Length: 191
Image (cartoon, rainbow, N blue to C red; front, side, top):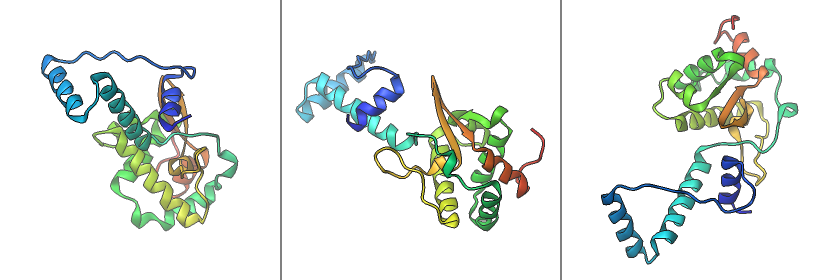
């Protein structure tokens, strides 16, 4: 199964069968699409398939999704707290805002879109990027191997959150991370 097929399968929760998309274009966009397809030497249908495949590739790079649960490999709350203290100078205001906001969501679970708004980011992609950067910082300090996807690529956000899909992607702070945030005083003890 290709990368695009895997993502489409996960995103649409469908069997391994083709998926038909329907897109309504404005007349000017329709004309532009036909011209681009012709310039590229494609039929309009083939060109649209290439565009969708490219968009899915781009989405896969932005959406850092899990392939398995990793709780048993996570550091303790005390180890996370030590790491947060050690990397404090590297924490950006955005990192802090995301962590605090995430901690205060019910059950410490939210979507990346909601978290982006709470941390004053314009787009959920910034959450994925910043959590990935933070994941790399923590893993480096803790001298631990990052969790990986099934294809072996690093999965840095998984050191902070667990992902689940229910119509949209949700991320839940690992309990050890939430407790570490309390230990270092980044968040209050209240829920």
